[in-house]
Length: 404
Image (cartoon, rainbow, N blue to C red; front, side, top):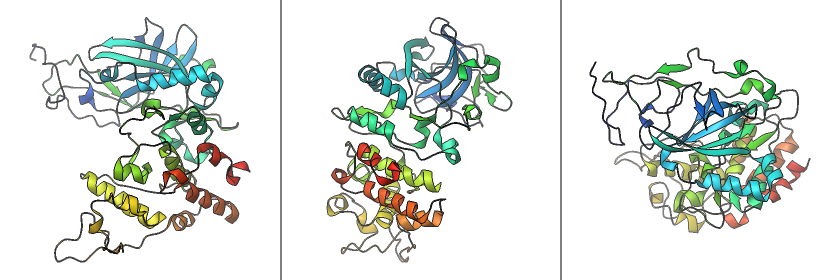
């Protein structure tokens, strides 16, 4: 084995590691500016937090179940990539709502318990300590009761948009977790980790020895009591008074003005919530937009779905659609569904499409005819092309369907 140390990796460094076949974060992102290498049993914040299990990962962080040895409780430790080591917007917003409305913040959002910085081989990492929560809504959708937008209403009431409203950021609360022994919560390591190996056989000081599969605490949710769900992950949140130039919303949950003009406004969460009502009740997304190697094709696919599912785009929005002539005649008659346009000599692609209401009925959710009508009416009320006409989360809560 070559004993000379490997060069410091960067974004342009060729692939360093053998392929990892488990569903984990990219091993190549363990480099300066990237993830911090974590191993089970690691201690953080001067020995206060002991890592015992991996809960999950995202593009900008890994999340771990840790034992707070000082306070004798279990917590979720979120370790951000080091390029976000400065005071993040997420931390600003969490501190703000914790100060102006601590009781409501604890009721509707995952509670921030602590924050600190940790220096590792890849730089300085912001670490956020949250109350320990259970699995996401999308892993237990069959258990979901009628989900009310109280958490969203709370944020909007305080001038904050979540920015990334999706089932993966809605978590089930856990009861009685701190009475359990540490051994009962540790990582189940059978086929849930994989050895990290460099292609050149050298040791890599920037990466962990193993990558672990995230193991949410689904088995610990109390199925006999009333479910409690909180919003999590404020990484994409922003103050209404200081919106970002661009937000990252899951593709199928983007509002039309976001797709066409990159617009950021106070109602993008509301549009996403309207899509989620459909998805959580029917079990299928309202707008299923596949990944394409072309952003234009991805947007076109989404916009075609909007047009057929909800109705024609208004003139102002349609005017921003630069490739609309590939699919519509000058009279705005839809004649082709072939993304990228019709090839020379080929026939236009014509596909029978369903409206939102027809898709809802076809999914046949377990609702009475009257309740199904109320749900479809609410979704229509929310998914309006004009952002000004969309109801606020507080107004949605007053809808007859939520008042029953």
